[in-house]
Amino acid sequence: MKAWLLALLFVLAGCGVGVTETTGVSISAPPPPGGFNDTDVMFLQMAVPQHEQGIEMARLAEKRADRKEVRDLATAIRLTQADEVEAMKKWLVAWEQPIAPDLDPNAHTAHGGMHGTDPAVLQMLRDTPAGPEFDNRFLNLLTGHQHGAVELARMEEKDGLNSDTRALATRIVQSRTAQIQQIGTYL
Amino acid sequence: MSLKRKLIMFASAVLLAPIGLVVLPAATANAHGYISSPQSRQAQCARGTVNFCGDIKYEPQSVEGPKGLRNCHANVGRFAELNDNSKPWKTTSVGRTVDFTWTFTARHATHSFEYFVGNTRVKEFRLNNQQPPATLTHSVNLGNVSGKVRLLAVWNIGDTTNAFYSCVDLQVSGGEEAPEPAPEPQPAPPPATGTWAANTAYPAGSIVTYNGATYRAAQSHTALPGWEPPSTPALWQAS
Image 1 (cartoon, rainbow over the protein chains, first blue to last red):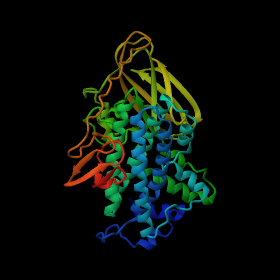
Image 2: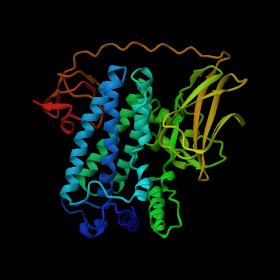
Image 3: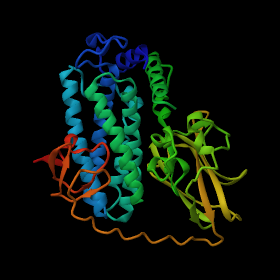
Image 4: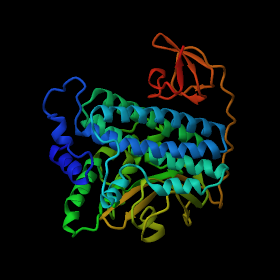
């Protein structure tokens, strides 16, 4: 990830303002213990709302899905992602970085798709009554949602610095890829 | 389109926006999608139905290239296996009318969806630059074909020069409807104990060992790589 690009992104979008000044982390410098870079911060800031949408999707499925295995998967996703969100917020706080960047409305519109927070996905699930059709829709939408999580986590694996954050990203790639395979057996 | 590329487009849009010249195009730069049912080639890679795939297994939604191509990999080199007909792709048995379901990671203003068998376009759906709905299924009559068919679906984006490509391998029978094979009833999982293993269904209360420690399942679930007991305290309580 080019430093100039991140600087542009963060400063212009108001997304983690001041990151480049406060971290003092040079991409070419050897990683200090517990160090982090702009990719780590961006990954966490984008992953938190992405995970929160996944938790909302899972909550709906726990109430409405027809099949027990789908409800069980939804519960496991809600519980594990809630723990991940908690850890991610803790790291951002410890690094003195904003958890929810205060984007201006236009920038937020532009950013929305990349966060994997498409309001239409949640709306479609809310509008689908309980029953087998709900299961199929949920599994399809969850697959697309988790592809987005994998894409984000692979960016962190490639360009992130912080070892805990990178380890989380690796677990996200593994578990979401495995979920997508498991979902395939339910469709 | 790579995430980095999208970020560049986003950054550019944000850079230009204050000047007032740009109607932010960045939100529409994130489109990705593929046919998930019947399983397209990239869906087979993502689900582990076949196991010879490279990067495509992580991003089946990213088979993007210029409009007008008629191959399965959109000329993307790292996805070249998608266009290799000698690979053992799974073929789905269907009748002449097939329901194709898309999976999206982001929904893009859309010019059209096209379906090709060989060089013949068997169906087109125009969206007039509307976003597709969050889930989308097209019913397509394949016409007078039978036997093994490689269908190519093309998602033409409305406001870029690109399209997304999905190939689906079909065995077409003459009738209108192919009988769906009844799903095999799954046996109830046996009481699970022993060493934690991915892809095992653990009812709540199961006891496992992992790296020498003992854990109790707090929640019924199927174990997955990345959900090892030490990193999922919500699923596994150390005991």
